[in-house]
Image (cartoon, rainbow, N blue to C red; front, side, top):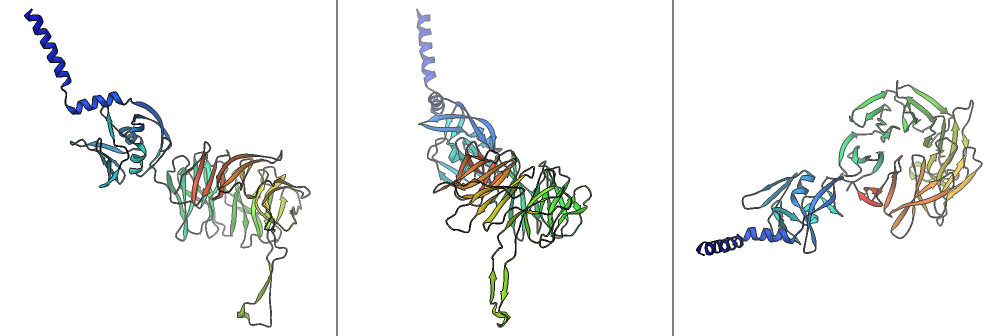
Length: 466
């Protein structure tokens, strides 16, 4: 009996000692029971990542350690249990249950305190990511420093764009990741022409102020000179096979010429003594061309008055741009004038086979709207393709045509045009602050909106510059 009694007393003592744990362990045990850890899918700097999460009081908290690992930060826990996170020039400090987080020595309030669950620290992700200098929305974390602004952009491929900005008296061109916004300098120049992407997307061409032509390799960032010819070269345009670059030659863009990539030799394609050509477009076979011709206004001065009075009359009659087509494969051929109307014409595009041109026609009538028009290369058939809404811009993406049009009070619309069938399809809406549409050969879409470059992904717009 004494042995049984001793066993009972011993068992009671064990039970009592099991409940008499320290407050810290008791809290941890309670926390572990109250909050269930789950694995959630996040997108961190454009990479899919699984991060542990818990729900506390209806608020989703994410693992500090998992976020730190995903963004490439460092984590250290001091002896006083302070969690220290460093990312670049930013240092964060936080404690469990504290309602503040310290960012570079400055305390910032937290709407929901951090929590320890199963010996790991969890925090509300929006506050934590913003404290790191990043952005957070819908399980998407971005801590990449974005390029300030964007003035011009062109797709390199579905994952990368070339973005250009003015820099002092010159220009800087960057390669920008379409998913994360991560960027690297490609070219810094003064007086160079815009970069023109090669058909294979591996290089870009430009001319310097002296007319020399260079090609820069987009993977190595190294440029090589391919021509020393010093004639003025406007609107460099690649041949489809990448063997040559066409351009408008001279200070008045009078000649259509080309420079061979292999040896830098320059040859003339069309020299018709007609000045002020513009918007050069080339067919896939490199033999057919479309372009505008601008006539200069007639300026007359009253000879009876002093010259320094600057009393002149300007007559702009007949100066509206007209579209011309030229087939270099036909002997003794001359350019064909395709249009003769008085409307302004912008955003000229030539079909890949050279059979027709498309452009946006804008009448001088203030009540009129921009219309998409197509005309065949004989100039005999002109057809409005899209007149439903005011057309702001026409862009060619591969073999397709895309329009930026008016839509509502705060949005514009993007349409895809089937020029063969004469039909249109609404692709997406965009802010009415969009000033330029950028479409790749694979129909990837980006837009310049209020000086920022935004990329369309799964029906949503995401800024990749700021």
